[in-house]
Amino acid sequence: MDRPNVRIAIQIDPGCSLAICNEIGDRLRVSLRGEHDPLPRHLTILVEQIAQISSHLNQPSEVTK
Image (cartoon, rainbow, N blue to C red; front, side, top):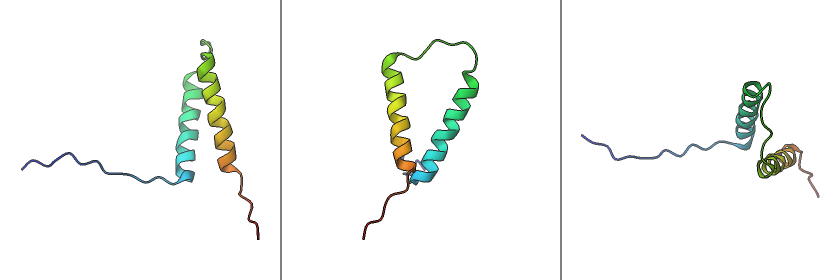
C-alpha cells in the first residue's frame, strides 16, 4: 500500500532555533580554522545582519504597565 508524501511540520521555539544556529556556527568556526579566503562583501553584510537580529532576540523585553 503506497502512502502519499506527507510533510510533517516541526515547530521549533526561538530558544531551540538559537541553540541550533549557535551550534552550526561553532562547528563552522572549527571547520574553517586556518587559512581561508575572506567572505565576499555581500555575505559579510548578511552575517552581520544575522548577528544583530540574534542579539536583539536575546535581549529581555521590557514590560510596561
